[in-house]
Length: 425
Image (cartoon, rainbow, N blue to C red; front, side, top):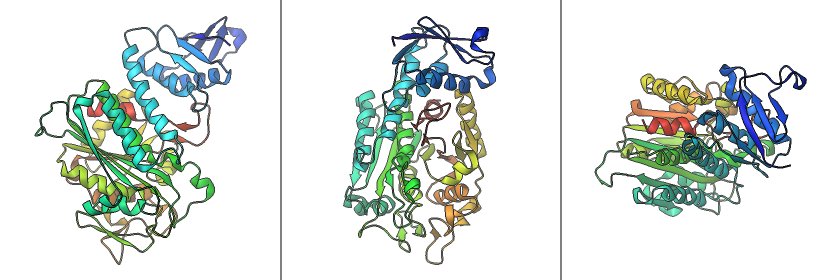
């Protein structure tokens, strides 16, 4: 089948296509019939999946497509294996649409890579290389790995990753467009980069482990967002911390009952080795706090509890500062991405008690017990200073294990546009 032109209209499809048809075809032209602006993006996603199912290898978008319309179509049309090619509209919005697609496709590719392809150090290096390719003069970085993590006191990343033959790593990256070493840090971004999560000695089932290549989705999301903001002309200083490890079982792996003591003095009893994401993020949040950034944002595929609460369509937002969280949610609404606030109070710090340490890393119950997503956020709040400038994003919508009527299987890259716009304000 040859290249097809795709246009978008609010008019209904010709009657012979059916009253509710989303797509109609005439010659080499495909028309999307979008009648309800309130559900516009979902309808575009469904139409894109229908067109992809026809086996069309390439399409060109023509006519009146907004940036968000185009990006939405591309992300639903382009599946992980043998993706079709999309040529964007040749209009004034094309450059911005290309920037957004580039960042989201980088995040999707990174997240969809197999655990064998992407090691912890590889995740750190690939992320740094991409960001440096966008503005090399403004980007400096270092990767701390293996025993050096322990020597520098990054106990969470080191212990979670020490069971693997491939060493854990932390990326510390500085985007400083002014070149002034004393420039204040506007944002510090922290991403969970678990390149594969077996659960450790709290071993997952096979079906629960199958999609755990995506457990570095937080690292991919903050990297993609920073990259997009750079391409959009970001003129603020931003520091990025990726907390990268494989959580595997071996004679050298960390164990239930271990107690880890962090650089800020907080001690943590391990009651579940499958609650490892918060352990590596704790290091990243301590490092972010040391920068004295005006705002700290972490992103992680952290809890199944967030998915239970919100499904696979929304990301969860947590903050101890309602003004900050509302500002972020307002930006998400402008970007037409789905985020939803979940509860967080100072007393959530006490929801994972331990008789042997300041806190446990979870509760010794399936899924961490009731309120698991809020309890995890409460745990993280112990490692942030000050807490009123911190946002935590639990990425429930980062990955789909199988295709559905709106999205192909794999990484979604959802949330990147909002995060990029927020740090670029």
